[in-house]
Amino acid sequence: MIRFRLKEIIADREFTSGKRITFEEIASATGIHRTTLSKIAGLRGHNTTTDNIDKLCRYFGCNVSDLLEYVPDEELGE
Image (cartoon, rainbow, N blue to C red; front, side):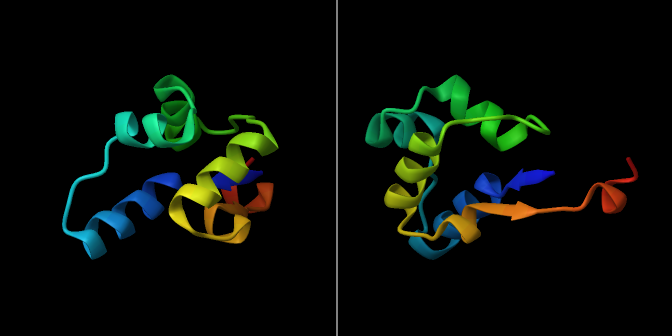
């Protein structure tokens, strides 16, 4: 399963910048709807487009490997 690390990236950015980052702020900067961001951050197994992944990587200045991680199903207990 592919796991999105959006919450972790937001938390890291908030820590280093000293300010809160909202889905509204990310949505405004990227053009990704808040609902989609919420699903990416919290819905297990959510599927999104590579365009959204590109926009998030651009916004956070990160690599795809920072945003996504592969977790084998065996580790999830499935």
